[in-house]
Every structure is written in C-alpha cells, then in structure tokens.
Image 1: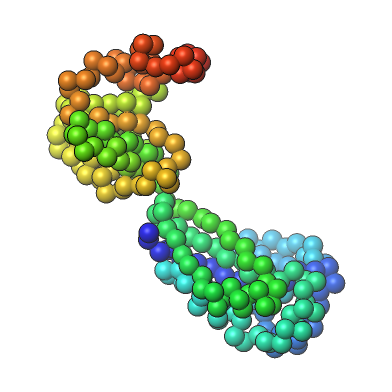
Image 2: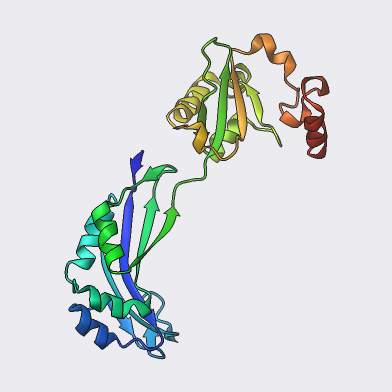
Length: 249
C-alpha cells in the first residue's frame, strides 16, 4: 500500500467562553490563530469579514509530504504543557486534532504509533480525520480468460479507458479480440498496459463496472450481442436474475 501523499494537522479548542489569552498562558505557547466569540475575523483568501460564532484557539504545523502523523503530533504537543491537570481543565473546550489526509492515488494508507495515540489520549484530545482524494475516479474491470488457472482478477480503468473498451450505452461486457480489432492493436496495448498496472484486491472493490474476456472466442456465443449483462439469455440465469435484469433493460 502506498503511503499517504500528504498530511495536514492542527490542534483546536472551541468554546463560547474561551479566552485565548488564558489558553496561551496555560499551555505555554502561542496559537497560529485565535478569537473570542464575536470577534471580527477577516479571511486571508477572500478578504471577507465575519463574526466568530464561538471562541477558538488553534495551532497548526507544517504539512508533511509524504504524510507523517507521528512527526506532526510530536511537533504540536512538544511545545505545550505536559501537565495533565491543565488538559483536564481545558477539556470543556473539546480539544481535537484535526488531520487532513490528501491522497493522490485511490489506495494509500498511513499508520499512527501507539506513542502518539497515548499522548493524545492522556490529554483528552479527539482525533478527527478528513480524507481528500485528488485522484480521478476509477472504474473496476474484472478480467476473465480461458486458462485453467484463471484468477478472475480485478483492475481499474479511468473513465476514458473504460469508454474505449465499453463504448455503447450500458455496455459492461467485451471480448478482448473485438476490442483490439475496433481500436487497433497499438491503442489497445496502450490502454490495456495502463489498466494492468492498476490491480485492486477483490475485497477492496466497491462494485464491478465491466467484464473483459480474453481468449473467449469459443464461448462468445453465450454473450448477448448488446454486451450488456442485463441482456443475458434467460436460460443462463435464474428466476431472481431474470426479474432483476428485466427492470434494467
């Protein structure tokens, strides 16, 4: 699994009666931003002004590329008081660690150590995770071939690649030889090579969008001419499937 591309982290306190100066004195460090309830806040990006709906005290640390939550937890907490009685006193302000996880691929992950989790727990800090993915939405294709040791593996395709393989409305089945003949061997190889570089575990798949058959010429007569699953011959499916497919034709 690829490591998370980027992580952002901020420690935040909120409360209507929150006095930023009091928290600064108790915690022993300056916030990145703070406000009392009702203070005028000016947006750095838009320049618009608004009144703070509640008091806040927020400290942020530098982003990490690739992500490194343990380093960010250490950077956030090391300058602050380690007196647990102070943290208990500040519990009414709902301390929370806001973490932004930025993905570049569809399957990235990260670990946070027991030490970091213990540091958060001792201080009563809630861990919140927001996940952002800038990667294109991919579609899942199952590849079935005629080999005795066929694995029925899953791969992912971009919308454009999927449309080249399954070009007609509602199509979710295709024979590789027909695909190659339709787009040409050079283009077919480019598309298939890209897709085969994006395997995905079956347990991680959220739906199968299409099935691509290799070496299937001898059995192609069993596929509907429309290449749509819902148009499979009634004799090859059970009664429940017939009722379901009829609703989607």
